[in-house]
Length: 336
Ligand code: NAD
Ligand code: LMR
Image 1 (cartoon, rainbow, N blue to C red):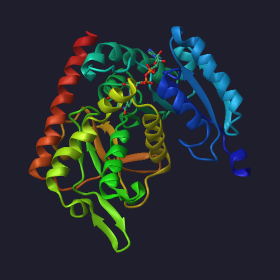
Image 2: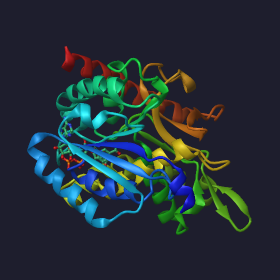
Image 3: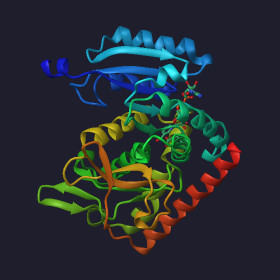
Image 4: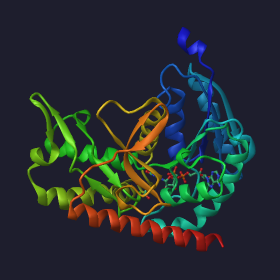
């Protein structure tokens, strides 16, 4: 208690806060799931005028829930007010994919939103604000945000592939009938789309006799190269089919994981997947927002270097990079 009294509240922006991810995400942030159980927060919630009444309803519920860590709520349709003084920005606002739509279909609608919100963030957010883009196409929206907010350091702009990472952990744990918390170091490479490459070549499982490679324990390369990859790649679509809505509680939870690990650090010997600005590591073209394995320390992420990439993986890394280059070109054509 005394510790939390000593900490100044952190302002956290959630755009699209009246939407379904927003509704799952804001109570998690207010409970300390994102920034820790001793970190007070002030929530900034942005949505568009047609959703203003619903947004106000969410604000009423946040007040009603009497979260001890929640020191204030700003609910607004004014992007400047929303961005002012925020140290963490979770960009969820946008148009979601519906059944039968590919992510490219939502491109035009979303890239123009990210272009205009980029300028508001760079002008009004706190220095060193950390940005996580959730809205699809997540990697390309993040890239547009980066390009139109040149004064925000590029290392501060990321996109969410932690949901895919967690999905991969979940599939391995189901297959081996083990605790999900005993599996680690899967990797999501590339785009948060069906071209992503979920890679378990370096993943391990904690067993009573030490850490064992996932590959060895599964012992079925055909499943790992086939059904496993396809299930993770298609999971977003499977949720949309089942719920008639895109994933929300798992997206919100993974967004908290992403920011928490970024700010508070990854455990020793563990990496996570984050969509970050490529520096050319693993021969991924520089200048894309691409998902890599990263470790985090002192509020900074670092791409894990030196992992071996076999021929099967190489092709998959290149394929998803190609899709991202195409998306980048398409995004620019939508903006011009
Ligand atoms: P939703 O439609 O329920 O909510 C989106 C909200 O954004 C709505 O309230 C809408 O009014 C608001 N919005 C629209 N334009 C806005 C703008 N210019 N500024 C602020 N708010 C705006 O959608 P959802 O299910 O919450 O999903 C949100 C986004 O997240 C979608 O793009 C979805 O595809 C994406 N998504 C990403 C992941 C991931 O892992 N990266 C996972 C799930 C969903
Ligand atoms: C997801 O992965 O659940 C979301 O990105 C929804 C989608 O469009 O697939």
